[in-house]
Length: 178
Image (cartoon, rainbow, N blue to C red; front, side, top):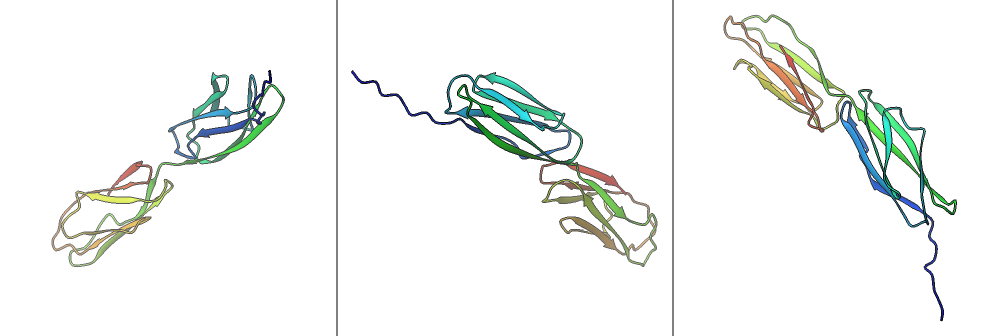
């Protein structure tokens, strides 16, 4: 009688995780270990304080948390099996700030003279989409990607207000009233 055992294979970390989030959003990632032997010990090394590690089974973990601080964060995951063999994986997370609008515009215009204003997006993630609501007919609006412009010549005295909105690639938006 001959017993043939499977060959030992060192542990390997696998998982699906978000590499980008927007500030204030929830980060959530599951990692599992494949191969190795017996009970596993997980370590999260150098992680930002806003991340927590939870065990959900012996061979798997969940890492989650949220921050309002934009930036690039990294940490190292280490799993060790009961033979003392390990796998290490470095995880990078980019946290983007919500988009904001910066602009230069005048509060007044003159009948018969060209009026123009420009707006740029700060932060967020590309691509950006601009919208304008409530603009007078004499103003033309142009979406230039990371900026937008309005221009035109008023024909008569009037008072108006309108809103400029930008939405980023993560579907986060901000609005500026003019």
